[in-house]
Amino acid sequence: MHTGTAEISRLSLLVQRMLDADLLLEEQGAALLAESDAARRSLEAGDTTATRRHIERLAQFTEALVEANALAREDVQPVLGFTDCILNPEAGADA
Image: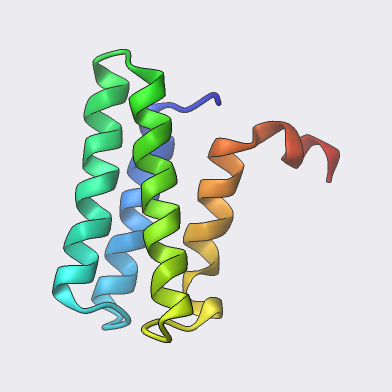
C-alpha cells in the first residue's frame, strides 16, 4: 500500500460529496469521515498498518450500507473503487 495524505484527502472528499448529495444519513457520513480522519492521523504518525485498517473499515462499512440497501452501488462506486486502488495498487497496474 502506497498511500499519501493526498489520497486520504481525496477519500474524505468523496465521502463528503455523498453527504452533500444527501446520499448518506448524517451519522453514516460521520462514521465514514471518522475512518478517513483516523486513516490520515495514522498515516501522519507513520503507522501504515493502522492506516490500512482504517481504509479497510471505511470500505467495509460502505459495502455494508450497499448490502443493507441504504445506498445504491453506483452511488458508492467512486469510494469503493478508490479504496481498492489504495489498498491494492498492484491490481491497477495490471488493468
